[in-house]
Image (cartoon, rainbow, N blue to C red):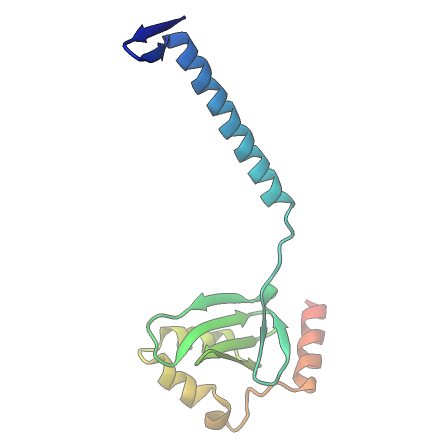
Length: 146
């Protein structure tokens, strides 16, 4: 039943309740469809290109965005392989054989940039953490034996 008030028709209370119930059903169905689509979507890990023009899949890395350093923007570390990926000035660099202790000291340093430049960066360490095929083989063998 509808009531006429001047020029406007006002629906009765049961009609409003039916409309509200229909809207709720539509919203619930839309959310269910959205969740199903999200669940079915493949999980894609991030891949970055390092300065050596090599693509590195960050799927096994733990990454942290750095906001307190003017030198480093992001630090990603794979503990099992001892691989460190660092973003500086929008470019990624890869350092191999970096121990977890060194990464923890980097993240806890009062000046992350200074610590990085003195202890990890290639120029400061005479290439100690340079990634070579020898390191990749040694790391792969260590991971397989674990």
